[in-house]
Length: 117
Image (cartoon, rainbow, N blue to C red):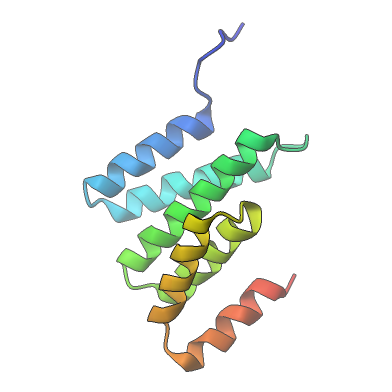
């Protein structure tokens, strides 16, 4: 039996990822954020509002981590996914900031990545 208030695997992974990021252990942070995304993507039932926000936050954090590594193409894809899941001002700002870091010739590639199935 699970008691109310207990955090699930995704929430704990998010907290670990944030801590790793703060400790400048970016690769470990990336793994934790990817775990959250994978875990929430593989659930058979539809996600509730809080799970959609958590998944968006994982994409957002992954975008920021990729940008810190100067992996702007990957960061742009994750930032767009975060914004599509939860179109907040914060997600839009990060998406625009990352897109402004990418050379103009690379932006076409990013847009193609996000629109192909």
